[in-house]
Image 1: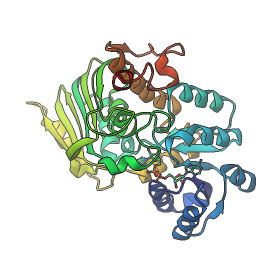
Image 2: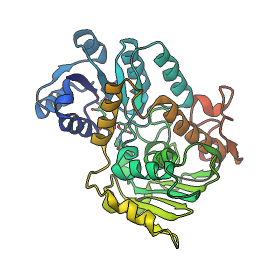
Image 3: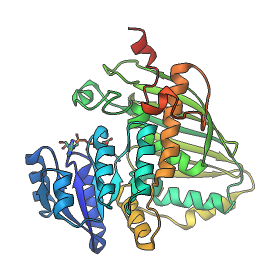
Image 4: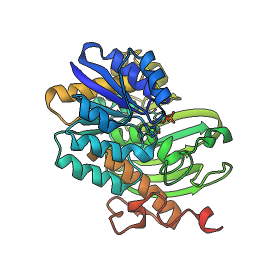
Length: 360
Ligand SMILES: NC(=O)c1ccc[n+]([C@@H]2O[C@H](COP(=O)([O-])OP(=O)(O)OC[C@H]3O[C@@H](n4cnc5c(N)ncnc54)[C@H](O)[C@@H]3O)[C@@H](O)[C@H]2O)c1
């Protein structure tokens, strides 16, 4: 049986512990770490008594591990992942995996010298409907992809930002682009493939934060699709929506924090009822979540493959975010490949600074 540790036993750690339990005999939670010892102890009591350690270094010293689940606030993600890689242990790191493109490249370089691999938690890629959609596209059933949209319209009131690590560039890495919409547009990227160019705006409308509280982008993809992306924490009627207009059907999902097949609709174009019939052949009540991703992660380890979401795929999503901020803050279109080490948006998503900060 494989052996896992969770570092950071706050809110999202529960989803990891549930996924580990659901994986049954495949993997066991043997250790937990939190800088807040009381929280770690309470978490360990709740989840079957894994051993509690004061630091990741102490766990790596004492335990033989296969996977470290990094569930801390974003600023600690890369240091903890590097520590795990140095010990040749795999890492499953929460989103956003890093604060910048530069940090992602540091992880990619460290992976080359390690037997361990780093995978990012983007759980919505792994729901049965997203897997089916990618398969039907690959089989050519949907025809050409032409138009798409990704709407993350969520609501986070002022109290949400009282937590010290939220709403700042240096600890969260960005606003709803980096922390909330990332789930939806990452799923869009997993379906449409490489993006080519972004034109974006970002604004701080209402929250007392250093980052944006809303961003919007128009995107072109290498396959010719044109798409719009909205990331908001200002929207009282909350929804997470993706829509894809293919030649042969519109495929849509509307959910909030997780979907089953019941949240998806497929509307065939005239003469293409076979697409909807094929979609209905497989119906699943499974919720897209950490359990689906952990199963895919373990499958990859079993077959000797790089576990998803790989650093190469993660880089595509993180570069998309860097380009979105670069476009919004410079007022220009930004192309894939344009943000290299000499760009101010490489070392930090804030880049040249948000217009609202520069206006002060
Ligand atoms: N995948 C998802 O759907 C999803 C949902 C919510 C949050 N998240 C992500 O999960 C991460 C954690 O979010 P959260 O809401 O659980 O935060 P949280 O504040 O509830 O929990 C974080 C925990 O990490 C601990 N911690 C901080 N620094 C540490 C360190 N260096 N070593 C050990 N422990 C440390 C804190 O004491 C706290 O208990 C964030 O990156 C967040 O974006 C992902």
